Image (cartoon, rainbow, N blue to C red; front, side, top):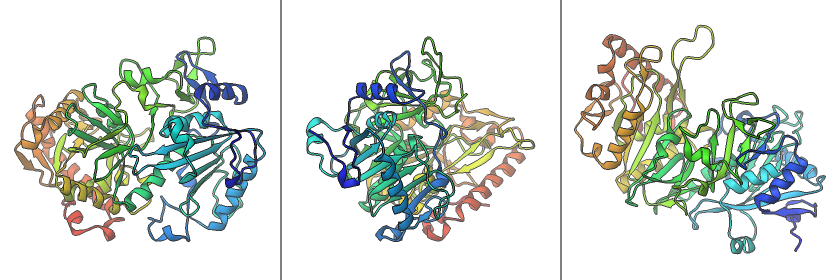
Length: 527
């Protein structure tokens, strides 16, 4: 039976709808330069000139019903509906010149009552296999009764945007219309744009239903009531700490929290590959097999063995695979209400404690702040850590104002008696260059103490500047490590650094203060 996409303006007759991975391998190898099969059976693909997302080229259509809801600014840049129509027509016209197209129909959200139907229309087998992995794959019965999608991704990434079109800043354009229920991609073949486009859509739709969408990982203990979610920016340990052989993985990156519990948005994982090893990350390493995609990696032409240490094409090498490739994944990827929420930060200033228990106000404040710190860079004269703030630990993908997500978090914390923890995986004994990185052994002991309930019952003392509740003891963690000041040789220097970091928090928070409640503002550190 011929499958038609004419309702979307597509007139191409040769449409491969939800083809199996084997067919996508064949088409990729036949049609796409640079495609190969790795020694472990994964499909190797190149994303072209763009090897990462292009946030400066992302636009959201203004002028419709959604306009009043959206947090306009650097994250959500306005696009005129007429310009969207021009870019959409450009994408449709290009796709209609292709001999063959792929259509991938899937779901975003493992909760059947809150999932959305997403259709991807693209020309590259690499893109189709990627979204086959990252969306939740329908059964044959679900595919037969799929009907019309809730959102459509028109991926014409090989064709550039017209730089002279109003509002365009380059040949790349990623345009989202909540009114048209479409995402149009021009001028970038990087597959991650589709993944994060779906997340952005969920970040708009779910809060309208009172559901918190989250950029986090999640796992579950032997007790199904023992669910934890882990927020954290790159380098803080989100993937490492949520990958626990004693706990089932719900998901590694994107989740929603409803009144019924937590559910993964995605059907797969999209992990970084740079310096990947079987010893350090065996689950991810072993997931790179038939059906997985390796993106922009360097490999031996004769043996097809991948060299994960090479960043010749990009440091942002990636692998995509279905979540069931992880041995301890819980399928379906749904769980009960979290018992613990963990905010991970790698504080290179060595000011924040290795673990602290947050009040609802502090939880909202630190959630909106989304803090971590990078080590000193390679530029001349840069010798101190660099503070990084990303609202809700995922600023590029937010649609509503950050306080919307923070208030949803607080509501669920209070209604469901959830513990929220701030865990510092950064430096101890002094800042980067003086102290040393927090022992992973200590951090794992802290996470274990959170899960066992030990820290919930511990005695606490408050930090005088940040007001954080610091436990007086934690099994397998030296007492002096728990209070950062005690690990510094120069206590005066610690006080100076703590005040400096507190001011950085204050300065960053100014852009949110006008919409923040008194409870949030009262949780700010003292300066």
